[in-house]
Length: 382
Image (cartoon, rainbow, N blue to C red; front, side, top):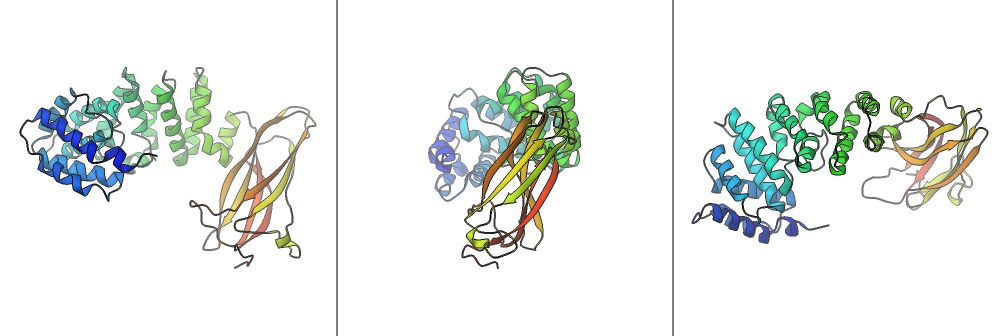
């Protein structure tokens, strides 16, 4: 993965200054020049904020003047890449500064759309969305018919509720239905780059409003093209794992599947040879088996997952779903699965010794919840 220096380091800043000198010959750009020595200890987001502030200091004046400067700079082929991130942030900040007008607001969105093919303005449009969602969304909706896929993607990506790296926009969280006109226009886009964004947008929506996300996907499937099923599968992936009934039904996985499930059956280990509950130490694996049997006279389409109920620090438990299989069982057919769930230490989860549980989830219906004990690495319960 590229380092912050490679993305937004002194060399990039020097090129940005060179571009702006071509627009304003003789201008000192003192704040930008002073920023060169301040970059090394900073993370990427901190560098962006530093350079945004430097741009605003070096280019005082109105939002219209800043717009004119950056539009002139666009004639320079060097004006591209990661230097665009602080530029877009400066555009937004000036448009929202005291004394700015609705004309400045609209012009800022227009400039961000024009800049986004050079990097992306998906982060910079978020303060504008929060400042006036009702004014921003109609302008953004016009981007859905842009001939440029980067601009069309911006309409979807920049308005995601949970866009990675980006600040949350409370207005979007409060009105999850507000962005539906955007993704309704784009789910059949000719560009896979755009469709991936739409799928991720739908997945974000599913975190807020599962039933709404499933309903939107169902409407899309009524007017589907050759790519729609893939968009919907990716967009509802989290709901499938959670066993959301309407989503599973959309994919043909009926909760009343007529399948019997045996397990999960836990394999005893040396750690649990003489105790009531199976034990596994942090760093080791928990072996288990599951058998699914179709007792009906029809094929049964199944999504089979298993759920680990992790003990939290306060003694309660939180569930985490893991994929086991997506399959179709013929009438009378049985399938058995043997898996080993790892409790190897990872940076994204803290394990708390004590009672945990495992269960199977078939087409969203949970069964066979079985407790077990997670021990400290040395085998001590707690």
